[in-house]
Image (cartoon, rainbow, N blue to C red):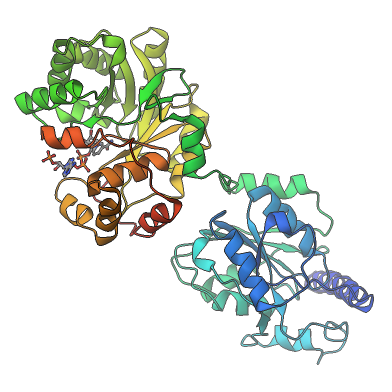
Length: 507
Ligand code: NAP
């Protein structure tokens, strides 16, 4: 039996390698080098010129976080890699040997042919021509290769050892005539950092249909890059800077800037909300966990402003998810403002779907107008959204110049969900460093604005609604004056460059 299997595998390899040789004889060559934006890959790139490579890499730099890297000396793997890149909105990079493989190199019948020798030698590392200049930008790398003697060609080892893949996800697939992926993917694991998340590999026959590739990527949970829409485009699409509002997917309008009330207690909360309302602020963010819904409600009722002009957000805490209907009624009672404009689930937690469904029911009953989530990121949303009926109108997450969530924001916005940032000024205990940041202070000086205003404006231009917290009337006033200046693209870039992935709270 073992012998029979060996013969079948040998035959498969023979067919594969013969195909390799034939194509090379006709002069065809897969010679793209450098990552290319997938839009450019319809025309095959044959130049190995470094400058060109860098130009292409720079063009694609901010457009995707997925790379499809493939080795295809015969052209069998290439179209499949292109399907994957097209579907995922990924960049495409061809791994090209510095010394191209000739049909003689690939002749399996000759025990001393180059391919045979390389596959026999675990330390063989065929050199690669060109490189991926900007590997840092990718969080997911789809890796495609043909099977040679049951394993990935050694050039794949060269590729994996040439970059720092730590923290990335690698999704391998192989092409073969008949043999499976075998241990070829698992054997690559030891070549990269242990923090890499390896997805189980798959084998495809040459000529596999595009739908089969995309179906497999779906199954593996590899979502297409959210697209090229930037925060600026999203902001322009839905933010009305004249009216200072955004229209939610629920049809209601929400102000672009508001007051956060975390840690504002008792009379401090009442006076802060009253000051904000007096100064034209019409968006107030509270939560069951802030223990100040009653105070927020009192300030809203006593403001003399018509209820319909004010937008109040509150949140259910995970310890309320068990009995959500009761929790919703408690919030309505404490706030005592007829209805709740927006209710969020404060964090993911046990029974969150149940709690969300209760909020959906409360929308039907007119108790709540819009619903959403807080502290939900890409993976959490991917898992959560298929289980509920109403798409959240809002996701409220930590966002400030030191923790920017640049991958998460466009993903959420492309779902038609508005993003709101908490801790816009870094949160208490962190504001001094952020407001004193040299880059931000210099931009503020250039506009005759404060650092706080620059940070809040940066958020707005990224399409992120802001809810700075303050009990200081002067600050509350300052935080409303965000619409008489605009940051240039260059200034936006400078603030974008301050990202440290530095979370200032645990959730
Ligand atoms: P923040 O807005 O980042 O910072 C608040 C701090 O900034 C306060 O110490 C405040 O002091 C100061 N400040 C405000 N405006 C200023 C200005 N113009 N110049 C100088 N300092 C200024 O932090 P936060 O209030 O904790 O977060 C904002 C809101 O997000 C919260 O209030 C809450 O509604 C929400 N939040 C949500 C979550 C969630 O999990 N969903 C988590 C945390 C927060 P003064 O009082 O002296 O002005």
